[in-house]
Image (cartoon, rainbow, N blue to C red; front, top):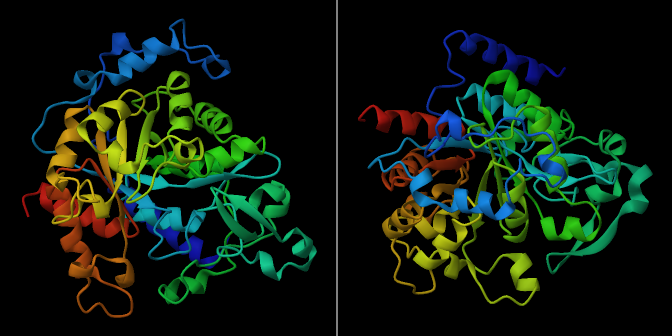
Length: 407
């Protein structure tokens, strides 16, 4: 075990004594069905069975806005650690997730890609050169190649060309070394974690997992679909119900629609700032992300998903929630989504000055902008969002708790 990880674990042990790692209102569920409405054993569901019900009946149940919307005027947003505490440690490492837990996050967020032997691992994308030391491994020099992924050409080393055993020889490094210089001190200390390890860590400390399927159309096209091993892993650890602290998210639509009849876990449709879901665009479907945030579009999402993840550009105060001139304000977008029975999660609040909104950037020094981020978080919370995805989960938790206490 590295000294850095040992130190973080020591912090965890200390704060566990006062119960700071988890609290009762952290599941992020808008409503809870009575116990007699829940089906019991989930055995066989992932092989195509749906506990005796048709896929369409499950979809209708989840599409019922009244079944999920609890009608409160204010909500307590959950805090989701973006790739772990990525403002402080290299993203998608057990160290980053552990630090996020010590800061009081409710969920840790792994982006998931597949290895050659179909094991899900946590990386922001399948190309490895930006986040690992793969270029320093001469034994893998011949693996460098170019691929077209989601319509764009990428050159480098890709997870799907490595077995898990081979990936274990690589070490993680900071993606933004100039903006996050302190994080580079941990370069080379951490391996690429598997989804199993992420879930084990989360359950050990009483937090949830907010998993994103990366490039699902691409991985399905090469015979390595992400959905089956994801469901199997969650089920192996007892997570298979909407009450469980687990979310599955995607910027695409097709994999969420395929997942809906197979699982009761909560599904989140991410909505980008521009463009369209890749699976729709590649199939010639004209539907865009702008269309998806209209009242009609939100009602359609509610047929297969439990919530939306909205990029902050769409719901920043003063920004047009619909973008491209559409007359949708941020308040209207959040309200319309919640009226459709959808959770609303804001993504991503970053602690890098260059990535903050211009009007909140201020005179941040060293790439840090704590006061500006606080203002930004307060604005989002006052929009009544159900969750905030943040690089600094400790700050997000502090702002959330301060507002909840009337501060």
